[in-house]
Image: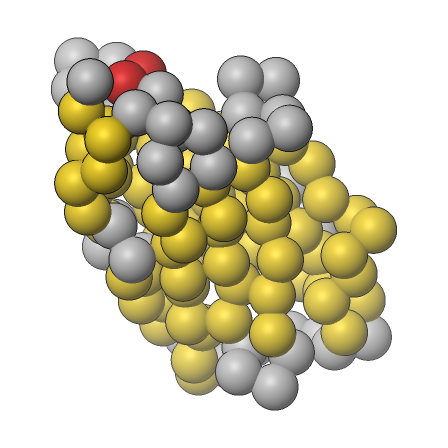
Length: 124
């Protein structure tokens, strides 16, 4: 079992920044991936960003982003803390959503574990 705990959400003005954190605990795997997703009211959940671990080391070169956040969001992590971050800059109202982190235990593209979500609200 893997437990994921997100934090860092909140209310921010358009153009501002927030950093989300996702701490993983439990039985994590040396070759795995962490993703961030979001779900806005009335919309389906959508992919935001992804980063992989290779041999237990966060592979910062292996990152992917949704087109809507490229150049504004950065996914990174801390190996020692088993924590992944999502730095969100130049926030827009359309970034308002509940943000979830998710764990892909085998780099399969399927996410086996999900966090509880953290609300991000961007005001104009």
